[in-house]
Length: 248
Length: 369
Image 1 (cartoon, chains in turn purple, yellow):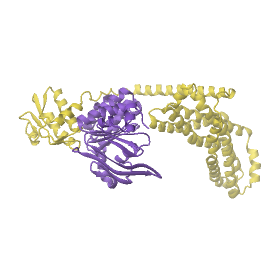
Image 2 (cartoon, chains in turn brown, blue; image 1 turned 180 degrees about the horizontal axis):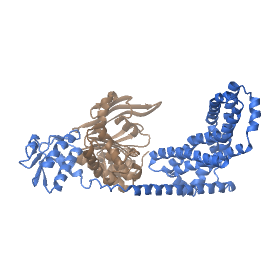
Image 3 (spheres, helix red, strand yellow; image 1 turned 90 degrees about the vertical axis):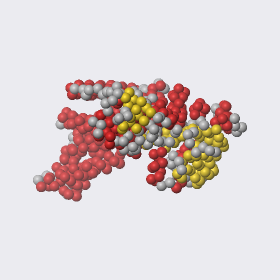
Image 4 (cartoon, one colour; image 1 turned 60 degrees about the vertical axis):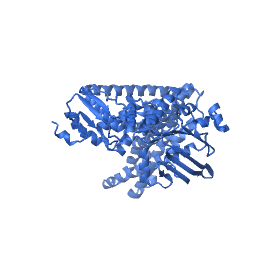
């Protein structure tokens, strides 16, 4: 494959006590694509995502993100890596004690020398991008579900990361808000060249966004390929998901 | 005028041109913007070309600076033209826009009298809300005395254990220590006057009238008042109170009334225990420092203690129980801003409850002594 690999997971194995959560998982994620990680409850999606964003230590196998091996990464390198990835958590995870603007300013102030007028303008630019220009001084508790997600997206891309991880961004959103959020993510990919790793169950979102699909079942990768290939897959599990909306 | 500007090679005034550097990313923009300020101030031509020919990397912060410069000149009626845009820069310019992002004008600061008036009005509003909530809680507390229907089974017992029984160790320990210290501090003075026996009057009256009810109320306010505020506030921010309402269950009756019964029922007993332990503390000091045996201490106690002291201490504790529950509930019901709000109302509930308890105690003091 001639595409540039930005994430490579090889033979990843994870056990929680006696229970094996991931069994010999291997896959690759490529630049400037939206890759969707799919699977039923307990299939290991969240565990994989937590490994990719460095929230869980690699027990066995190898996880490479932007050419850094997370199994043997030093603290300083890990911090540098965090400047290059954005994470959009399921519930937004905005800090409630800060306004939306302060939430977005937090990583910029911590990791750059930007301040004053320019910082304010960069924040406004990001808020404009997610159509939240009016929410600058609002607190997270004053936002609706859809607005909260968009504010979280603005914070996730505060440092213009080349790689964005999204954990079920559409959870709890109505179809209109979901479509608008998907369009934003698509714009980030098309206009800014951001690579996106998405964990979601929303078929509509997958149809709109996915370039590649990684399908998990019981801790194993059962399918890895393009959306087109997934739609015509003979695998019963994938068939049922895409054509009947069922997932175990 | 042009001389100082020539020191920046990217500003070419003769050609009406601003040539952007190779890299205009978040780590470089601050310096570039500071350099640009002189240029922005001094430039007085009718047209400006912003040249992207050197740009190899530009991010959202870089776009912000370019857009800021453009806006600055457009306000001065200078036509701004972008030149040699790469595909990447063009895409980024199309997705990021500063349009309509100018800060909203902040209203002028209001006159001090207006602000004081607003504060007074808000305070009055809070008082009215507190009175309304108090009336509501007392209505349902009295109502549930006579109507057992829909009463939460076992909840009174749970609350009595949580508010009262679990507070016994801390209340008794602290009351004993305070009684001990109170007697110890007075012992030396009384001995120097030969008035050893008055240690009994001092300890007993102080504990029964003031210290016992007050210490108990302060400890319960800190322990249970905060818990009540946090529980109700959490229920509010997670919409549990709304869920109760939509199930036709009155949140005050369901959540508050059992707590009120639990506090009113247990606080007097806690106060009696606190009094007792405080007096025992005094008795220990009297025995070891002033040679007053427990028999003499108890005999003297029966002479110095009046039934009125016991009853007022009892009445106080009932009143304090009401204050603690009411304050906790008031702050719990008026929470806002999610998790942070819960923390704030919890702190406020404890501070206000303790303040109100001390104020009420002094009013009792003025009325009865």
